[in-house]
Amino acid sequence: MRDEQSRLDAVLADDNLHTVREIVRAGVPRGALAQAAKEERAIEVIDGVWISMAGLSEHFEWLSYGAACLLHPSAIICMYSACLFHDISDELPWQLWLAVDPKLTRRTRGPTLRSVGWSGPLMTVGIETHMIGGARMRITDKARTTADVLRLRKVYGDEPAMKALHDYVRHGEDIGLLWDRAVAIGALKAVEPFVRAADEFKRSIPISRPIRS
Image (cartoon, rainbow, N blue to C red; front, side):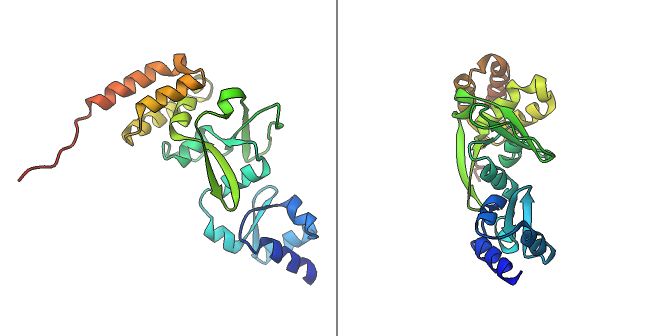
């Protein structure tokens, strides 16, 4: 058991995210993970992905996002999970939203992950890459995320879509870029009325000038 724990410690020593498959390949049985969790030396971030407690402290923010992308490398964080990341929502979705290409990845199912099947430009336009806990995380950028929740508002709800658009404008983001993202993913017809309204609203906001003494 001591040798097993030593091997586990060696795998997790970089304080990054690691899949159970990777850990088992290093000669660590699954029982050693349960023991490490009991001793508070490691923690399972999401089902199938572990990190040391030191790594948890270092990479705490958005760690579940990195863990999901480590499990599903071709997936993209999207929709309301991306809204939260970009601060265009104050709601914490109870599931992590992932976009997957059905031709490349099976739709993910589980209590913590929710997947949507996208392909073509939907999987390439407006995608950012970040490193989270040593894992490569791909996520829709702020403009693309706003376009997505607007185009799918009839499916998933008007209120969060309007909140995202409101916060996008409030943050002073580029309305032209939002328009470009909608065009690129073939969603201009669904998004155009809201983009035009947002542009008019933004134009009506007076430019702040320094007060002269």
